[in-house]
Image (cartoon, rainbow, N blue to C red; front, side, top):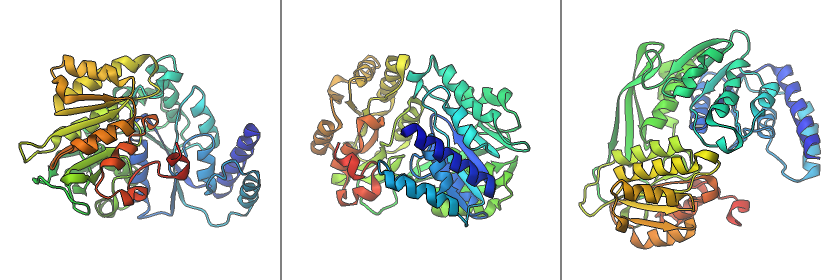
Length: 430
């Protein structure tokens, strides 16, 4: 039954695309897809009628559902019949679709490209996440690189120049290539500055920090971009990528930058600053975890300034899943990084034992490290131990459920449905 539903769903999506012929921006990568997707949709909305993927609608089910503009009826057979029926009567349709193409297994990108060939393909970064289903991270990169080979004639491929494996995809592309990144000569930012509040008490509703930089697009300086409560490298890279896409599609860059400044915010579970109990600050990055993203998040933690001598930087990290042969290696790298940037290490999950071991070897005191089997246990511990002025960075794979730890230590748990990931009923029961 599932295969039949997928086939009908994909055929209906193709038919709708054929009828309305929207311009398509497709994004893939191991890290940063969602942030880039949201930023691109935001800047393009200043010129076009835009639709983007709902939550994680990025697979053989989710991409067609985004194209049709309908949420999944889950296991309701009648709901699927209604969905298919409605797809024949779509009249008002977006000018631009911003789609996210996720890859978990070999052949996934072929299937997604067969549904929707993009006018613009964006590749954000390659990491060992999902490598468990591939022979190597190189094989994973090759699968994602297929997106650069299925761009429509006259289209463009946009690559993150900071990532070595993404940079190498230039030779695979079937259309013109544009690069962006901190080292790019054309589409980049200069003088990145993360400014944090010099305060030892963080209250809900306050502004905690901002990131600002000078933006260059197509080689020209476009002005300074300031992002409130957005942390460091990742949101600025997403903004540069979005502005590169906007320029290619003829949008007004000055208006696009104002839109980013005024409307771009951290999504739940993605480097989102939240007031914690006892005047602490939480950097909630609990949506998911890839090694590169966790390393970037720890760099963001390093950038914060502690005012009180008694305050601490806390890394509360759940294990990273789907790394296959790279599991031990990547967790050890994280442990070494924690020893560099954090005063306290809260580790969750069996694989994080490797990170604990590496942190100790790198010189972190054993008394500053606590290991727990579950995020609930870690949350109860941190609820007791966190202090005024502490800054806690929280991240882990979806299976680690690190949002449970965040909920234990956030100052306003009544707002958890709006601020945290995985607050739907099906998740709360697990």
